[in-house]
Length: 262
Image (tube, rainbow, N blue to C red; front, side, top):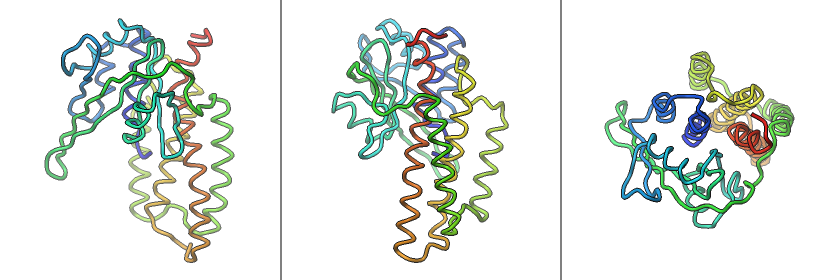
């Protein structure tokens, strides 16, 4: 969770585009991010892969009025609604976009080529049928914010006691990169999202970064098997909570529209 998921960028800016809040060029530029190109294949009415602008228009014509995010993990189908075939592919990719208003979803497949330092990344989004049902285990923004604050406090206490707080040059470099990214416009979400969603997403991504650093920095002072297990028990719930909060933030535009709020 060091960076925003591709499904988050696609859903956030796709929602802004569907709502007429941004131009197609601006939306696609944000969706692609640092990747070379994104294509969508398997769209009804299209014989082959198409670009994001055409794909978004096609989804709109099929009845899609909004896009939700799913960030599933083993044993936790977060944001998914079925069927099993779509869930399995989404779990394999660890993310997906689920249409609202029409039963279509998108699962990314990432291709990388080139030498270290000059990797060329292309993404193919596979369009597949989904079940029209409430997404699994997605909290409201308010619930996500409260749960995240509580989980962070509990995890910080345990990690501090076990001496595994993120530190050292690798951790500092990652934190500096995060701060630099956060200062570049602070545009974590696309136009049309409520301020609370931006706040929740920023906190969830920051928590995700700290969790990743704690895992990557070895066992620190947790030298016994029981202490290592205790650290894992502290990290897993807050990692799950941070993923739920991310999904709640990305999905908030659709949830507000569903409740009649714009």
